[in-house]
Image (tube, rainbow, N blue to C red):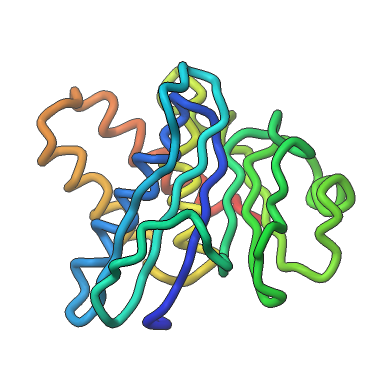
Length: 191
């Protein structure tokens, strides 16, 4: 793994973008010699309002909590944000974009004018609906991110997220199992 990585998450309040950013940071920071932070910048938005979250990874302590970033990876958790947020803002030329959408990859590339970038698509809403009964795309998107980046194998990302869910003590086994299925399916289906 590269010791420096900047990730920006775009979603809507209630979809778990902030939780995903923090969860990923927690998992990455367990590696020796790697620091990670997950945070968001938002006000008193209500469910459904656009939210931006960030995950930073470095080999030295991270003291920058600003929203200014030139991301290596941008994740779009809500297909209704297509065209409403500028996913290319600051995105490195070698950047990757992962989009939750039921659309064909080429449609996403054309809609967001992402020619020249590595673009990946996964229908995280459908995956989470099938596994959890609700469209909460954060854990499927973590699975897709793990596959696209190679940060974690499928077994590692499933184990890490499930352990965090279990440790929190807030979720019944049915939700934990649904998240396991969501991560595994997104890891397999991201294109």
